[in-house]
Length: 419
Image (cartoon, rainbow, N blue to C red; front, top):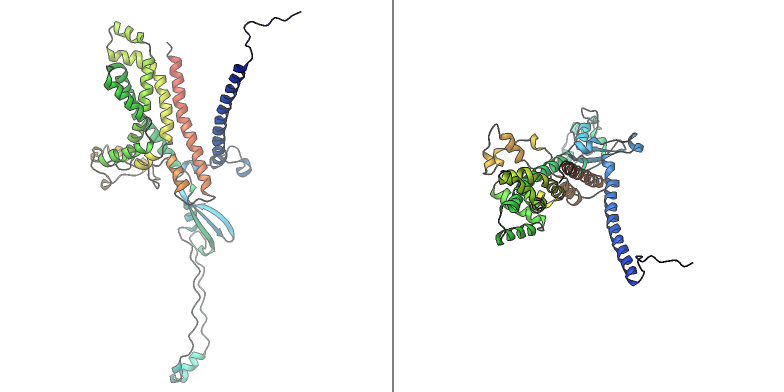
């Protein structure tokens, strides 16, 4: 009995083997890239999570969150021996331990009495007798102690390491403030610009040139935007290194991506939505606000996710416009003095808006900038590695939380708006 071959069965040949080779090559490249990503994230999580989460072997319970690392400011680590025991303390703990008294070096030995000089014969007998008599014993002063009962002389092998103790709470708050503020400015300006380009502008050479310029701006390096922010916001507007200057610099950096994605989302809404609304007597702005923009919001939020990742991860614009390495206070914990302000519209705000001036014109720190400082600007040692990987781990978690919030909002909008 002869078997009949299916007429639509693919015949093997040189083309089939070539197609399989291309398939496996593309698949291999995909998994190699995925493997490198998993390796990078795995190293950061493996080496950074102990700074945030403890282990059962060390802390006795799981999970154990190190609140000092998440909710305190960076400090100097003091490593020393006290009565032969090696200890590690942050700056606050060390000064509480010693009551603010630094270690005192051992005192020099007392000088021995000088030998009789050549004119000793001129001395009287009484002087000779006094000179030959044994010197009176000097009582040894008691060892100095601090109010806490610690003798500073017992502290030996004292070494300090910058940014190796404390936590990263100011950096977390600064990163969240920079992301929220800059993305708010970028979304407002970007969506309004996209609405004009998509709905109101007449297509022509000028609009085409504007779109080409926006696309080119999306590929400009971030350091160029940082220099632009220094020239315009820091120097010309007189905002100095501040949260406000960082907001606008980062917003202008992600603005091209948001404009392009928002315009594409607006164009994806069917033209019939606009025509039906206009036929019922609605104005053009009412049509855009009620029948076009709500259906384009999921695509706009997609662009915001990309913007969040870029804003949170940039170091150069933050370095030039928003951050000080030693800025460990939060914007609401300090008042900006009048001599710090350069001429500008925020410099003239008085009560009850002085708090807004102080908040916006206060410099902040950020997680990517902190990683840059602890990785390249201070001596590297075994203690700074914990801070480096711990900061990177928290940074990934913060970006993931903000991005997931945008994704959840986008999914909910897609479910509620179907067409």
